[in-house]
Length: 400
Ligand SMILES: [Zn+2]
Ligand SMILES: [Zn+2]
Image (cartoon, rainbow, N blue to C red; front, side):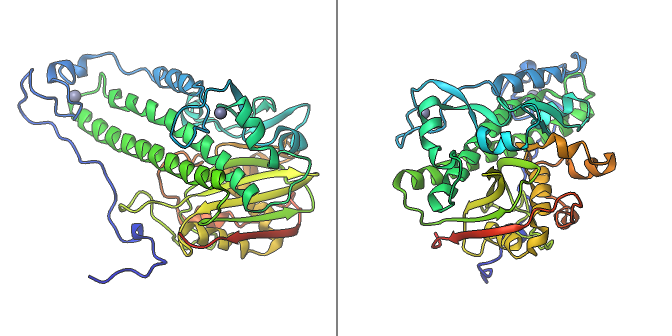
């Protein structure tokens, strides 16, 4: 067997990673295991399901809202013991730097919450105004850790070195991990979407549900493991294997964000990894856009192969013409991250078709592959954005 050159992610050649499929046999006894994989007896599971009342989507939204209220400190210690501190609504974007700088009367536009919330608005993707007290906040840190851990990136200004970049990345991945755990809890509902549906549709629904759950479980396992990788380096202040890249502008960008995404294509449209193909771990990149002293700064951070998908993605950003970087950063935040906030003064000057072109239904919740055309479109200029790059830096620390 010939091995692949190291720069190729194996998802480029391996088959789609699907859950084993289920099918409904012709005959099934009431006391047999149900065909759907639930481990329940047929009589307690799919027997007579077609006669049930159709599943009410409101249950999904209610459960999701409940999950998003879960309070715990993400900064569990090395032994995995939960932190006993008082849980607070922790901002993932500095309130006093990043959010205040783009707010109007203490409000910013929030492009989307999470998918279930989007669907509650019946497909309406219109951003809504939110107060900066709640924008980007989640009950995922205790007061002590929220205050102490992130102090180096919360001040009036900040020089980005590996320690600061790592703090940005860590906070982003803690939030992603929190989101993904909520989605995993909700994913169980999908197995009930066939209530009241004809028998012939039930198999399709169950197979879809198995794959949704597989993706949701995968996302939890992956984000938790990334969180551990960042946390370990945070505690030891040994940055081996952690890479980052930052870009500072002479002015404010009309957006702030914090989150992580799976780079699928680079900014020249080159395929990096195919999601969700193959068995290899996908690389992710954390992205933070915030500001210090009224100058926006973009920080990418990742742990990955020296020539892997994450490194190649960020290199494709760093390799762009400086003139286009502000526009690309804005499109990237809106296209790839849910936790993005927009300046009302800027947003309200845009035309409706242009707003629609910026707001995406794809923002990084799923395990899907974006078409190459979306990655290429990220590189289009935005006329009203003229901030120029004044400084950049970063370091790809030794390979892992
Ligand atoms: Zn069943
Ligand atoms: Zn804590």
